[in-house]
Structures are given as structure tokens and as C-alpha cells.
Length: 351
Image (cartoon, rainbow, N blue to C red; front, top):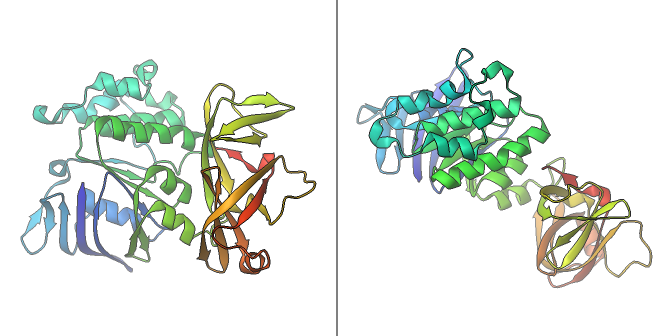
């Protein structure tokens, strides 16, 4: 998928100047509230008309002020999943799911409802009214309804922000699996660095009504390490722990990690802040932290006065964060050997 946008829009005192040319299957739009993210989405979807400019999806012009082109939303074949599920309250789950499918041209019906219902685990919910669904169930139905419209592009506008953390990270695997299974590219809009890291491969950064950069989730996380409340977020997928002395022992490559919160017999996703990793130049004689890893420094980067230390622990990557003075005192350079200490309680289980 290639999206080219060169459009301006004024809404009251707010002005948007959107200029970007991006290709990929998993594109993020990142920015704070009020930056203009949703305005960009609405321009692409045809819910807002630019004051001037052009918008192309692949080689098709969706809008051109100079050529008098303005395709209606239904002709653009773009589906949206909103922050709130926006389900039809008078329809059952099944009727909501099939709403767009029935209005889709037969030649564009490439996705079988049964396949999607199985993937999203919606079969037990089909005859329910939407008022009797949990927040996570509503978002799964909203996602299914959008996908069954058989779009060529899926727009997800803050689809997780109305959910608590537990539900957010339960929904993310469904979002990714639907895109991968049915080969639907998407634009994923969020102000969350974690969601950008999990959901996207490229990111358009929006600030004060401008698309200020095109970057990767990794570079975005590094650049915002110092200003983020949690620093850089290391995300680790671990499975099949062994319960040992009240802690869960996970294999992580050839390493072992002791974690205070675990989920036996299942894969879990853990978050580890760069600020929770303590670095030592030499092996400490005694330490209370249950994890001590011998690491090699592979890279260093700066983020607003802080230093990110990229560590390799037998080939597994971690990013630690320290102040410049500490980096100088420890004489850290690429190639240095360090010992990383991490408390068992520092890992936060997301899923």
C-alpha cells in the first residue's frame, strides 16, 4: 500500500498541513491529543474534504482539488475502527458484523464471514445484543464489521484508548492477526509508544497540525526515551515458565529470567522500562535483584541528555537508560562488557 497525501484543512482556529508519501502494510500515525491525527484519518476516509491538495491511495486519486476529484467514502473502500465501537444498538452481533458485508459489491467479497468469525472468536456472541457485550468484545465486533466490508485499507483511530490496559493488550493480537490473515494494510492511530512498537512498521509523526517526520517505531521509541514517563520500553514475549521459589523462571534465548508475575503454560508479553535496568562495570559481589546478566554494549544513543545503552545478552537485546555522567564514569563504549541487574518485580505483564 502506498499513501500520498498533500492536503490542507482549516477547522476553526486549527490548521492542518498534511504532506507525506509512505508505503507499507502497517503504518502508524503518532501524536498527542489535538495534534491532528484524526483529521488526517478523516481526510483519507473522505469524512472531511480538504480545502485544497491531493490524496492518492496506491495509484488512484481519492481527492484532487485541481482535477475536481472527490470520491465518496463508500467508493474509497476504506473501513474505520473508531475509539468507541460505534455498533448499531438495535442490531445483534451477527447483524452488525454483516452490515458492511451485505453492502459490499459481490466482486469485492473476498473474506468469508465464517473465517473471520472463527479468527476473532465471535461465534458464541452472534445472537447477543451489543448492549450485553464487554468493552473488549465490542471492539472485536467493530473490527469484524469493518473487515467484512472487504476494504482495501483499514483505518484504526485510537481503537484501544477506551479500554483498560488488560483489555488493550488482549485486543492487539486480534488486530494484527486480522491484517495478516486477510492481507489488509492499515493505518493505526495512537498516542501510545507501546502500541506503535507492537502494531506498526513505519510511523508518521503528527505535531501541531503538521506531519513532522516519517520514522520507524524503534527510532521513535529511542528519540522519546527521555520524555516518556517509562523511558524506552523493552517488550519481551516469553512462554512456559517454571515456578521456582515463588517466582516464574522463563527461558529468554539462552538466558533465564526470574519474574514475579507469570502465566503458566501460555505465552506472555512483558514490558521492561529502560530505567529499571541497573548497570555495573564489574560483577557485583552481592545483589538483591534476581536477574544479573552479563552483556556486551552494541550501541549507544542520546535522547535529550539521557544515554540509551543497547545491550546484547547472548544475542538477546535490551535497552538501558542512564545519565551522561554515569556513562562517562563507567567508561561505557560500544564493545564494553557490563552486568545488568533487574528486579523480578520490574517486569510488567501486559498479556
